[in-house]
Length: 88
Image (tube, rainbow, N blue to C red):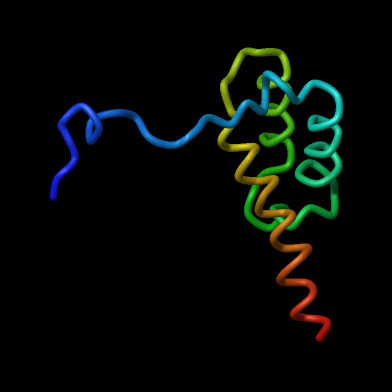
């Protein structure tokens, strides 16, 4: 059985409203986890470049929602899964 064409062509998923709802609480969490000196991304990402694109995102000059959301999830995953398994 197949879905009607209008259903199969419809955009799926959801958006991450990080910019719209993040001023304050979420931004400070991202700064604490993703932009900190102890962030796990430090081995792969240039800290100055990351800070620059973060500043552009906060100022509304760059739409980096998915990028920062992904980095935030990576930091949370690493702290909850990788570090816990390493200490076991």
